[in-house]
Image (cartoon, rainbow, N blue to C red; front, side, top):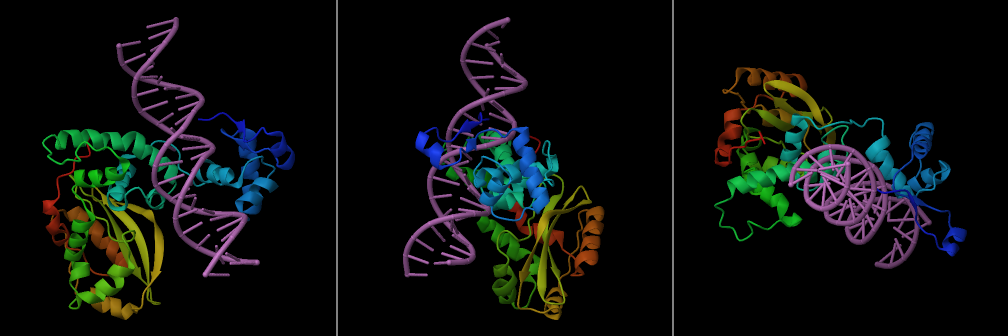
Length: 304
DNA sequence: AAAGACAGCAACCGCTCTCGA
DNA sequence: ATCGAGAGCGGTTGCTGTCTT
């Protein structure tokens, strides 16, 4: 942490500009910022916020302080195992796109997740890597550059975008249509990687997936949920709404052919069914089908 | 008990993107 | 089309507390 400091001590700067503080925020500054944000519902640009709240800070600093620390909806404290696994999984899909990962973890900030990743998870993955890749012949096996870190992690987790996409296309919901291009050209392409179902193969079921909800207007409401140990953990992720050209009836006819049954776990099956019947009425997922291509993935062990 | 190493994390930096003039 | 300001993002820094020797 940094000590509060003055940005510039040059006499001319001091004369021409108001002194801008840097470093740690004092409780008084926090109070000023919170009071201002509450009074004004967070309206206005950040430089105005800084000025009007009487803070000797740049707008950028105020924004960061608010987003990462003062926002009322922040969840403080240690990451739960569920959150941790979700982060690992999302990172395997999204890489270092912390803001997008954070968007799927309510109450957590990108900075928090980034720090958690760099300080905790990375180390664990590294230790996993050292135990799982001791026989690796890859010339990059010892490359610790951050740019490769993501791919390494991905490999450790047995995931890649390539096999993820293949895997996706094996999913009945995407592949069952008699005209695959329909999904390929619309939903599959409209949904980017951020909104695709996320499935995770692990010792016990801890599956995050994106649930498309169809409305009469033809909009798809993307809701990310996950199941752990047979219990719904709720909508862990933000809802995203995308517009598509298909009507509700179109979608229903496409999806009516889906027959999704989880034969592995009655409880999970019930959960999945309930979820889809209540929220989606889309049909059922065939977890065996979903997992068909997953057999090639390396088994995950999160008991770090 | 002291010193060095390490971990955690708040905050800054620099870059890119977006949007309005 | 261009430019500038503001916002957002990922990478990095550096301080503090804790652990280890």
